[in-house]
Image (cartoon, rainbow, N blue to C red):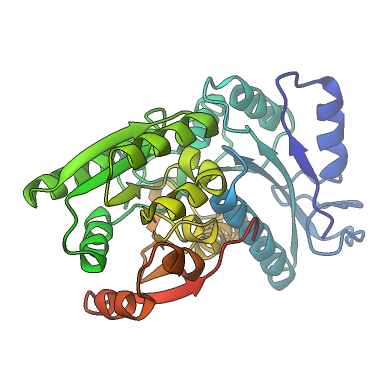
Length: 364
């Protein structure tokens, strides 16, 4: 497959419109054929004229390890499903580069509408909210991915019967289990740092859950936030200075994007960082506990195929909540902060959580 990535800038031009039209190979979906599509469907070779082609617009809130995992597995699964089902999924993908003011996401939404995509697949809550607004007056359905709390964020009315044009996959975090893993690894914790971005609504609920859990245990809390990598780095410095015993971050895109810039500081300080996804550990954090984003991307792709090929109705298609059964431990970080990997495995096993070992990776 020839993957065409379109990175959005603040100046979205007419040239992008023409480029998207070219990359989708003229396929219009809705049971129509593609007279020579080149995007999606595996190798990029021309497809038979009789083959049904669907336009899939993929929108990431930003580029970082977790969301990149979702996007890659989503596209790979669509390619595999296309071959199995005898159809072609043409897709163009966009990233808003983490811009929180919404301008770029609004432009991306307008681009999707102008190119008459058959489905929009936004990844992460801010992207989903923006695409819902953009497609409000259209009949374009939305299959979202990686939304922590679809009801609280106003995306669906009910998890079992969403009731609108959107459904998808959720990476809701079991905050209590993260706290229990933290205490299993170190029963003597006195102070926990909470590191997150206030600009991301998905972080609000797990942070409040962590506060309630820790308060009930008589454990002090130190909160620090940031809206970009520099601010997150400064927040980490402040948590180190506050002498926290461990740090918790939920499924927060801003912190995940900064992990490679801060994990060595935490190694030097001997502070374990627990993140709400395996990709935190892959980028240097001590422990990542949360859904497998490769599986989440694959499940999202299956929902896209169900919608486009089988005619599934988003209004009555339940949101699929992925669950975690294992914790990913970065063995390099584990050694650097002086923790015993075998003791960690034993402690986590007592909670029914298996350990997967990894090392720090720049990308995956």
